[in-house]
Length: 307
Image 1: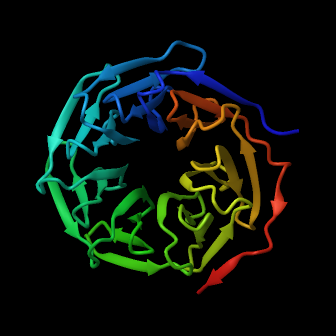
Image 2 (image 1 turned 120 degrees about the vertical axis):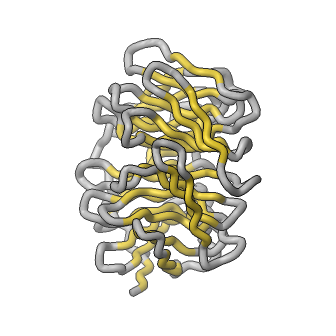
């Protein structure tokens, strides 16, 4: 049997739920990129939201080390912070028009973020001190970012690579086997594997702790995989923005994909929810809950490997 998928309306179709995370309060927090709002949903209750500047473009949201939620404001070129009570603070960044996109908390107690338009990785302390680290490539369009034990990993969408930045600011670049793959989403699994989506190639990539990269072609190569997260078992879950599906892939290459109930719902961010299910933000104005089903998997035999 396929997994049960339920959709919960949280906004109008023009608000654009985009990224999602589970907050420290056991609620789902999500951005609404088009209406400039931060939303909150406790499963089983009515959603609430907090208004930002309407044109700020809140994009990716993450738990912070201070018990608040932190998010990027892509159009306003700021980093935002919202407390569990809904109090919002904004932080202006050193580089104008930098286009912050991905954000994640590092184990050093700071927020790390990507600057898509400035080819930099930024670091922001909880008291607002920002540092920027230039990438060794121009036009790389750094996108999503995720924390590992001693570093942050990020995608370089236009440079066809993923990058690693240590807590000391040292950057290492890893080229991808497939040309023009367009990596976007990234997540680090419990075993240290780095998972990433290749939106232009229709593949999911995995870098093992030893550095070996494996790419898993999806059944629908035009699916436009966007965001990725991992569950407690190390399975990677991803959204297919162009395919209107959510999928999963295990470390041995077993892929399962599941159609969403509403056509053209535009799934973006994905996270493990407070109830243990997978939740994804649908730009058409809803959140979808997916009950994991590990029995419906198919072995992918077209893996591409690179040392």
